[in-house]
Image 1 (cartoon, one colour):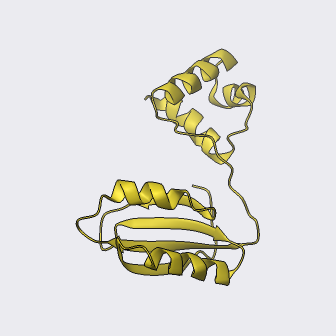
Image 2 (cartoon, rainbow, N blue to C red):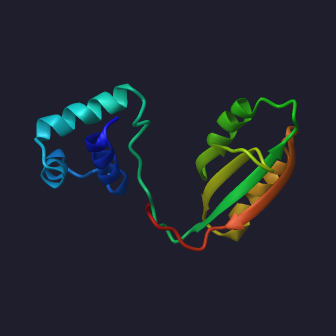
Image 3 (spheres, rainbow, N blue to C red):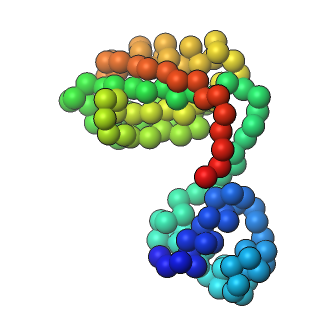
Length: 137
């Protein structure tokens, strides 16, 4: 990855629907160059997916999950990612092992997700933080 790739990625992070022609104008190259670089970064796994960020008016939260040391965190992360209200599953270092970023209709929905996580045999602890505000980096 070079500086041009990083400029293209920064624009796509803010709006993945930005037309390649607009990106090309903003970074000072051709539309074909932008298209080729995006395709290459997608094939190389630099760009994992194009997604939608929402402002639904719902309650967003981070549920931090500690799991038993004998647990394969990848397997449990894959299962948690299938839950409907889960936007992201991060495997993290530190006190906890997994962080869920969730978008629930209300605090009761967040509480139901916490309860559901605690019912999993592999889970030994949870902590929850409500997300009060969000900015795109």
